[in-house]
Image (cartoon, rainbow, N blue to C red; front, side):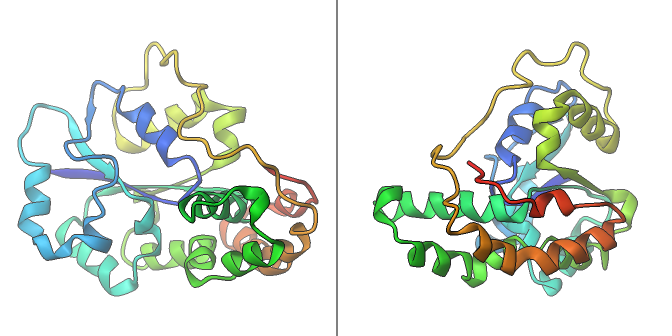
Length: 237
């Protein structure tokens, strides 16, 4: 049975989360990390998806597909109809940093080097529908919270992985109702599936700040937390 889903966000630490939870003796990932059923594989049928998590060896089964964060409300309603008790984990990252990291990944997929991509190439990527949707955390959360109660949704910030990985690990275990790691994994502080190290071009920061400034302020009000640090000028890797 499916017990938990990691729903994103893309480029926000989901590979680290998967590597961490794979080491927990009470959790299992019967499929690959990213099954992509709800956004790409629905033609295989719900029973196929259920079969991935069949069996009971005492461990809780789940999967992590970052694209699920931006599922449309109608699809989220279907997820809820099939799995109303599932626990959700949503990692969010400074959306300026997330957009830059995503764009760098796209450069590689376009078989280019970072220095071959113009500022305009990056700006076009930043303004693409997919990139902007993935960085619109408030809309994503509102869509999921329209179906799932807040106590079933754990929201964690990417920067906390570096600052307090043990705290993140414990928060995940508590949310999934499994014992905390004892001892903590030796790999807890390792980075997983990191992108190119090129830092954000100073010329691009104002563009991203213009796109995401209002969204960050609104998200802070929605979550009841101060996210102003996300708008401090910097050149993120």
